Image (tube, rainbow, N blue to C red; front, side, top):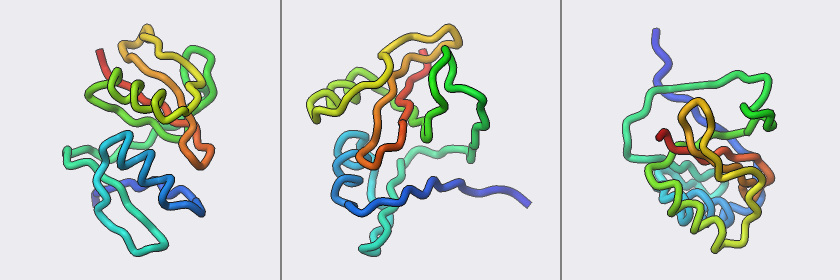
Length: 116
């Protein structure tokens, strides 16, 4: 038996906002759209992961989602241009990641990061 995939399900009323955040800002592809559910994905091969934490590191709250990107500065620029509030960072952490926290349009705390 093997876990093939882990999907984060976020309840929302405005799927347009999801497309703007996950599609336009984070460049994720819509791989399924039934009108009542949209699934976004990356074409990169990823291993299923789930993190269990008592804190988010550096004394921060545990984020709802962590999204690793290949160009943190570009995503930060897009987030700022969209007028979204950065809640933490950008900062280079002692464990080798550069990251910032932002809330998605549905209020979920998202850790956007890159490994240095």
